[in-house]
Amino acid sequence: MTDYLTGGWPIVPFAKGPKRPKQIISLGLYRTGSQSLKEALASLDIVTSFIHRHHSNTREDWDAYQGSCEALTDITPFAESRLNAYPEAHVILVT
Image 1 (cartoon, rainbow, N blue to C red):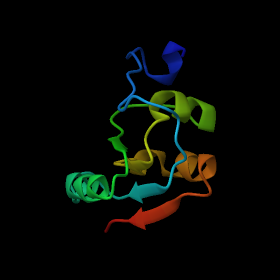
Image 2: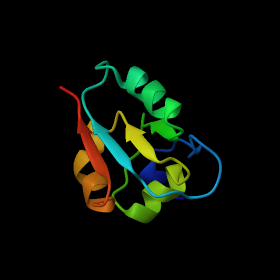
Image 3: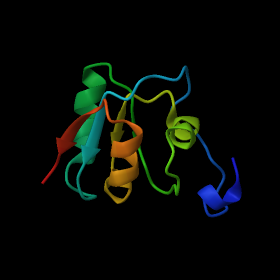
Image 4: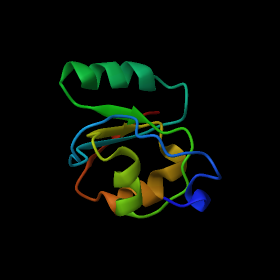
């Protein structure tokens, strides 16, 4: 991956393993229970990840970053690109 996607930060996948379809996208502001949601999804054997810094728009770029994750949390700043990249995913709106 090129540096412009990460602002110079190395890309480190949040979870290792085979690429999986994205089942869930959680949209909510930081500090609104995303860790609790991550733990609840983990109890259902759904692999999740948090997004801290990433600047990409395509499905291929997102999959390279966290392809083995099935649920994405803490992604509100990237909501539009994620919803466009994974239109088949269910959405949890945290308010």
